[in-house]
Amino acid sequence: MKILITGCNGQLGNEMRVLSALHPRHTYFFTDVAELDITDREAVTAFVHEHAIDLIVNCAAYTNVDRAEEDEPTAMRINADAVANLAAAGTRLIHISTDYVFSGDEHQPCREQDPVAPRTAYGRTKLAGEQQVLALCPEAVILRTAWLYSTYGNNFVKTMLRLGREKESLGVVFDQIGTPTYAADLAQAIFTVIEAPEWHPDIYHFTNEGVCSWYDFTLAIHQLAGITTCAVRPILSSEYQYRTPRPHYSVLDKSKFKQTFGVAIPHWMDGLRRCVEELKIKN
Ligand SMILES: NC(=O)c1ccc[n+]([C@@H]2O[C@H](COP(=O)([O-])OP(=O)(O)OC[C@H]3O[C@@H](n4cnc5c(N)ncnc54)[C@H](OP(=O)(O)O)[C@@H]3O)[C@@H](O)[C@H]2O)c1
Image (tube, rainbow, N blue to C red):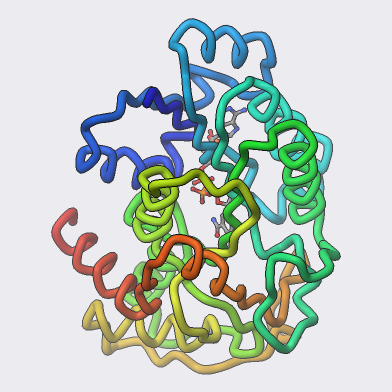
């Protein structure tokens, strides 16, 4: 297959590039905004035709939750209008979405068919993107994920490693529950979809297994990195100056993905261990 990966300089895009080396029978086209701005419909159509693309994996997105609140039109252009350009290109599509399409008020893991109710501009634009995909591309797979981190880009793991080394104490919220997800494991899930004997267009949830709070996650990050000089204390969300409200509970039920593709998913601690080891090698 000829596979176009958009947003290749991001966390997930980079992990897709790493994993693509293990799947050499496909031809890959890795693009970010400099090579292919997905908001440019003509450019997307031309690229797909010129290179006879069979499948688009959309790793491009406007992911800054706080900035999206101040500039929803730009977030909408990238997370929804541009996604329509990809969905209308006449190829198969794997599109990545988010737990932020849900309200975060639930008390049990969200299933794919549960009612959506985004509370943020980012969530609204990502939901609009999903709706474009469903309307325009019957051959699409939508993977909703959450709490993504990687050795690439800026993310919570890297921030907590830096703060852990710089500070003697740190307050981290313990009343927001979710599942940290190693982008390398999400990339593996995408290749599971690509290499499956049959194509199964649908919406799926994919994160690592298990749940924790940001506080627990931070303790695990510091423990695995051998940071012992920073006292981490649990605080409430109300004690932290959030610019945008964050979901209290955003755990996704992954049963459908596991049953459809017959795979087990690594626990978040396992993903984190591999990421921290990888960071030690890189630094
Ligand atoms: N990060 C999370 O915690 C999280 C959680 C749930 C779901 N997700 C979803 O998972 C997916 C991957 O996230 P990620 O963390 O890997 O994102 P990321 O690191 O922010 O990467 C997104 C990439 O897309 C690029 N991009 C932005 N606008 C573009 C355009 N018009 N044309 C082409 N490329 C463009 C970005 O470039 P610039 O950096 O120059 O803008 C960046 O390189 C996204 O769909 C995101 O919504 C992420």
